[in-house]
Length: 456
Image (cartoon, rainbow, N blue to C red):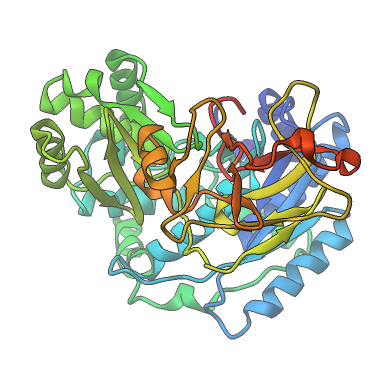
C-alpha cells in the first residue's frame, strides 16, 4: 500500500489511501504528542469523520520516563485526545540500556508494548515521514547494511498478530509543520532532539544541512533510492519462496530449520534476515549471522542461541524460536476461584471457566478455590491417560515443552495436589471427582496468552 505524497496531505486522500485497511477491527495510532503524530492524529480523525464506516481509532502513548516532563507530555496527549473524542491508552515502560544506546533501547521497549496491545487483524499507524526515511537510510548505510537494510522503512510490516503502517513516508517534515501551523495545532517539542550525542540527531543537525546546501532535492532522491532497494528486496523475498514459519504450543514464533539449513549459507542467511524483519528485529552483522548458521549446522547440544536487537533466538529441536519476554516467577501462590481471573504479567491471564460437557476439567466444592503458582522443583503429577504418578520435570520433558517454559507454566493445585498444568494437561485426583461435592460445578482452565498458540 503506497504512502501519501506531498500533494495528498488531506483527510480525503488519507481515507482513500487507507481504504484497504478498512476491514481491520481497530486502528491504533502511536501518539507521542510530537508534531508528526499530532498531524496524523488530526488527519485520521478527519478521515473518519468523512468515512464513518472506517474502523474505530485509539491513541496509544508510550511514556518512556526518560524526561522530567514525561508525565506532563502524557497529560497533554490525554487532553488532546479527549478534545477529539479519541480513546486514549497510556503505557509506561522501563528503558533498559544494554550497550546498543538509548535510542535502540527505547525503540525496543515501545515495540514490546505495540505487539502486546495490537490484536489480531488490527493496524497501528506511526507518523514516520520522509525526513525519517532519509535519516534511516544514511544510518543503515553507515552501519554497512545490505539490500534489506537500505530499503529503510517499509510502508507496512507485520506487528505481532496485526500490522504496522506508515502512511506519511513520502511527506517532508516541513510540509507537516506547515499543515499543523495553518490549523493552529499544539504539539510537544522533545528536548532530546537537540542532543547531537545521539547519532540520528547528529546526522539531522550537522550532516544533512550540508548535503542540502549542495543537493537541495536530496530527500526525494534518497527516498527514491530507498524504494528501489525495497523493491529489490521484495523481488529477492519472492524468489526465495515462503518462509517455513511456525508456532509452538505456547505461541512462540518459530522457523523450521530443516528447509533453511538445506540451503547455502548465503540463502539461509537471507531467510533468517527475512524472518527477523517479519519479527520487527534488525539483523546482526553478516559475520555474526554466518557464525550462528555454523552453530546450527554443527548440531552439538541442539541449543544454539543468538541475541539480536534485544531479543533472543533459541534453537529447540528442529526449529528456531524467538523467546518470549517472560519475567521472573514468584514462589508465592495466589488463590483462584470459579470465574476468577489472574494476570500473570508476560505469561498472560488465567481464568477458571465452566467446563463443557465431555471436556476435561475438575470438580470444585461450593466456595472452594485453587492455588496458582509456578514450579519450585520436586512436584509430581498424575496426567490423565498416562497411568500412574511421575515427576513434573520428567513429564514436561517427555511432552517436548521448551526449556524456557518449564519453570513458567502456571500450575493449579488443591491442597498441594496438582490438578492442571496450564490449559494443556489435567491430572487425576487421589479422590475421584465422583466422590466430591458437585454443587460447586465443574471447571476448566482458560489461558489467554500474550502471544497466540497455534489453535488460537
